[in-house]
Length: 456
Ligand SMILES: [Zn+2]
Figure (cartoon, rainbow, N blue to C red):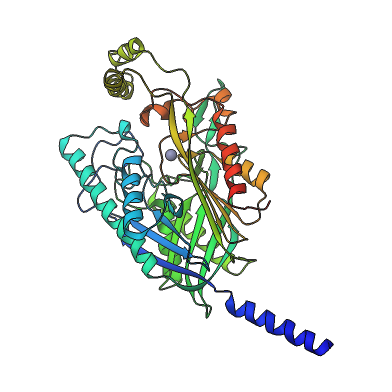
């Protein structure tokens, strides 16, 4: 009898094993280098459009499909950040053409400061004349077409794959919130400040073990190249992707930003340093390939939501008027901001009390959770989510889906600094957020992680 039992057990096991289908994965890429000199994004101090390129910019996509055929597509770009007016039409087109619902498509950006202005993203920072504004519009059209098509190409490339998660570390990221002798916070170097040196990497291999590509993240501004450098590039992340792909021919390397809004590469300032940081990041990902891995298996579950992120006290019409006519000349950006918000005030009779802030949670099988937050998210968020959700099998991204502002943590409202106050002007908001944003975002992200089935 024992013999029969074992045989039945074995047959049952074989039946289940044969039935369990592997995941599928597909990659695609498109060049998104501007076709003519175009205003570069990220630094308000620039006074002219781009001059040539160090290397091409790319949009890349990784499509993943679980055993039921449920799909997720992750897009990475060598861009400063998606504006809502670029992202929304791409999301709509992907739904129409490929049947992807909002929560099945993740758009990310590397936050390179040597790529063109992206539609209305950070538009308050640039002095564009009519011709340059037209080029930014033309570039947005190019981005829309190529990103929509790269999503479709990744889906067409879907093939059975082994997908696993590994981790590396990289140490060139340093906290940039430096305290001055007067007690203010300036952008500088703060070696004692928080950092997150983790490099989570999804590794995609064919069933026969051939490396097909990697999707990795690091929490550090792509600002090795400063505002004096006018050539188009992906900064250290562009160099890292190129270095990995040249070390592993016929693979696709995709970079996304972690929560590195208060973090800069160190040292910085030259193209050579961008290459050096890129090489070290590529080497760290390479090393992770031979380290410990968690294999992704099982069903995907995804969730996407926006929460109304509240503004602090809004300016009155009179205050906007005063800001607009302030001719002290010290802040042309505030004047531009006041003009735009006055127009909105007069059109709608009031200013909005909040901004719809996107949070994305993707559970890709039992072993991997990806939490992707919108905006320039500071390190505290990733560190807190890792502490409260557990570090195992977790990737936390910032700069995801839409970059509408900095997302400081609650403590920073006491400390002040660019991330809290001045950046809101460049990002075209009528005032700052409130310290309540941290609990609001963390609370919702944790609820969504639970909703998609993350087990701490
Ligand atoms: Zn930034």
